[in-house]
Length: 279
Ligand code: PAF
Image (cartoon, rainbow, N blue to C red; front, side, top):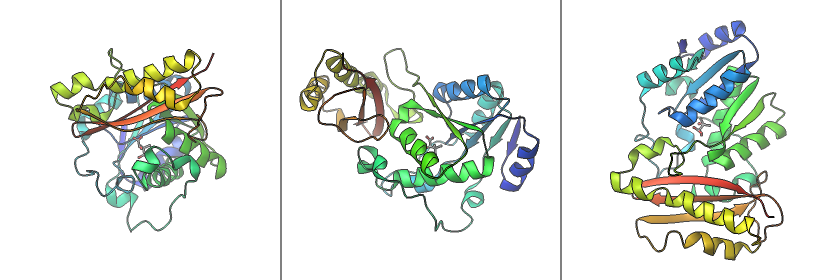
């Protein structure tokens, strides 16, 4: 496996890479969820590239960019063990040699939920992903369903800007108790870890309510919120029901939808989502 840190070296590597080239963009601190993305790319592409870059322009001022874990050595071992051909791990100056002036302006798909609570986040994500696509020039790129709104933003960007990359959606990987795998889970204390699956349980309650025929979004939300039962250790930021492609919150469930939520468990912000289909 090659580890590459400069764009010039990567462009050289790209000319010799076997095609189709599969690409898994990450911010590192790799776990089994990333492993699933890599496995999926490995199974369907002749070569696999992973990027590891903690992207400052997708963090809000209040978020702790500096606190984001950066275990590069173990991430490289993780990739090598999974049969990755090349890891692109650029330093900050390589990706942003000067202050970024040009950004991808994302539309309404980025307005609600994560977009509301993390202003500018998706602009930063779309910009770095487009930049990485330009550098790596993959045929396919793999994104986890856990970040459903991110996936919708990237799909829309690729369509609207005619980017020649196929976006592949990969299902969320969960712990046995339902907690979605995330690099942030490592920040949970022992006690917080035991209550973190409440987020998944609330989404499951909404999913069951929809499957049972509930259409009224307020009633579905009430069913989901009873799961937290006033537990003060979980601070819900939002729980919304939205269209899977446009990410617009709906008032009534008239077809397949996605139920999405974000909550703080102690000092850690967790997000998760499930799809739900009425009978
Ligand atoms: O999902 C992530 O890890 C990041 O948002 C991404 C897509 C690598 C862009 O920095």
